[in-house]
Structures are given as C-alpha cells and as structure tokens.
Amino acid sequence: MNFNLENITRENVKGLSPYSSARDEYISDGSEMVFLDANENPFENGVNRYPDPQQRSLKHVLARTKGVDTNQILLGNGSDEVLDLLFRAFCEPNVDNIVTLPPTYGMYKVLSGINSIENREVLLLENFQPDLNAVKNAIDERTKIIFICSPNNPSGNSISSKVIDELLDSFSGLIIIDEAYIDFSPNQSWVTKLDKYPNLVVTQTLSKAYGMAGIRLGICYASNGIISILNKIKPPYNINELTQQKALERLEKISQIQQEITNILEERSKLIEELEGLTFISKIYQSDANFVLVKVDDATKRYNQLLKKGIVTRNRTAQPLCENTLRFTIGTKDENQKLMTVLKSLL
Ligand SMILES: *Cc1c(COP(=O)(O)O)cnc(C)c1O
Image (cartoon, rainbow, N blue to C red):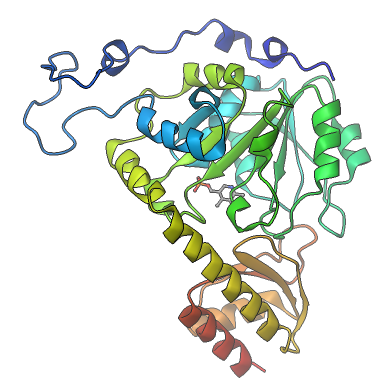
C-alpha cells in the first residue's frame, strides 16, 4: 500500500491555515480573566460567550473512553458535517471520485452530488457483503474515498472485517468506516486499528445509541495528520455551547446508556421472534443495529397500512437489493407491542 496523505489532499487545502478565532488565541488556564477580546455581550445568560472551538473537555472524555489521543478526534455538527468536511478536504470537484456500496446510507451520495464528485456505486452482493473484486475494479488513481457503513444501514449487518482489512491494505485513498450503529454490535470498533492503518477514518455519532440526535454531534477518529487537515477547513465554532454541555452530561452517564442499549437489544430479539410468525413477512435480515429490515409481500401496501394506524416505518423498496422491504426501528417495549398488534391485525 502506498498511502501518502500529501498526495490525496486537495491543492487549495494544503495551503490553508486554520482561521484563528479569539478563543483560539487566548486559551484559559482556569484563572479569573476579563474577556474583552471577542466582542461578546458581557451580561451572563449561560450562552453569551463563544464556545470552545476545539471542544477540549468533550474530546478529553472521548479520547479516554476510546483509547485514542485528543488530536485524533474531530467533532462535527452531526456525522453529516464530518462527512462533508472529508469530501471538501480530499476530493477535487469534477476530477476525483468516490466508491460507495449500495444499498447504504443515502448521505454519501447526496454529499458527492453537492461537492460535484463522481459516485461510483458498487452494489453489495445478495448477502449484503462487498464484492471485493468489483470494488477493486471500480477504483482508479482519482478514487479518494471508499465509504463502508458497518453495521450497514438499511440492511443491519456488519461488513466482513476480512474484506475491510484487505481494502485498507491495498487502497491508497481513505477508507471511511461509518460506525453510527457500532454500539449495538457485538463487533469491536475499527477505532482500535487507527495506529495500524494510516488511511483509516472512523465516524461515529451521538444520534443513535447515545440518544442525542437532537444536539447534532458527529465524531471523526483518524490519524493526527488527517485530523489536522480537517481542522483547517472546519467552521471555527461548529459545535455550539449547548451541544457541548449536553454531550458532556450524557457521557458521564455511561451506565444508563449501556442499560438502554441492552434494553433495545432485548426488544430487538423479542420483536424478531414475533415477526417470524407473520405470514406476509418472508425474510427478516440479521441485524447488528437498532433496526431490522424485513421483506414483505408488498412493502408499499404494508407501509401505508401501518401509517393509517399511526405507525411510521421506512419503506426501502426502491433501494437496490431491497425490493419489498421495510425497516423497523426498535422502539420502547410499548411501541414495539403496538407495531406487533397492528401487524397482526393485517393478517
Ligand atoms: C443515522 C446515521 C448517521 C447519523 O448521522 P448524524 O448526522 O450524526 O445524525 C450516520 N451514518 C449512518 C449510516 C446513519 O444511519
């Protein structure tokens, strides 16, 4: 593998130095200071000051729990901002391309369109694993990123670690592993492999297992070199004060989060067991996430029937390899029972 960060960084980005904000130039050591540097309103209301542009406290907690350095972390306004920054740092519009593996998370394609980057789609195989040879054939010298979603949305399965290892070893661009659902999975996070693979980028989020979709906090783990480049182009205050505070509070309650995950996994098992008894469901796909994909007789008909009874699910029938599938998020015990009651009434 001949990965070289310099080679894959966009020319204009190489020359940039990060915007230096008032809060970057003076870093508080905790002593009482008079802040007359950022043109803020001095009357305290909890949010009258700019937030920490480097989110030091939050990164400190994340670094400790994940076993990485704080300089291997970049935070974004949701993973969506993190993914967009990766495009803008490494993909030259109208020149470079990326590889995605549908059926998968829709944002990779959306962001490739926004950034004017060709999206080379290599369909997963019937078992929702990558077709390694087809991926290798799709790659050329202008391929900058391969997006791998594991566990994959909407199928729910984890992507074979053997395939990922092989790509990390052979591809000279970045492999981005989207681990939005990793906390529901029995598999180890790829964050533990950052020191082994210089071209590995792992994204996670507080939106799913951590129960904080509303605060918008996405996390990127990568080498210090990659993170430094992303830091050059991120908006200075992209993580607002309320988000930083809420995230810190939540991260202190790891045992509660763990309990919720355990509960969701138990509910997933129960739901799958009950779904197996429904004649119009022909397949329930194996899931390492907080949702299950099921194949039904007529997805659009079933989707509308559920909707009429007040239950909103995701109709994935238009996605490749997902004809007549619905995706059910695992809810509370109550919500899952409602889903089952309605589904049984449709028999
Ligand atoms: C839900 C989800 C995300 C979350 O994105 P945020 O912007 O952090 O809320 C990222 N990737 C995948 C695959 C998802 O399903």
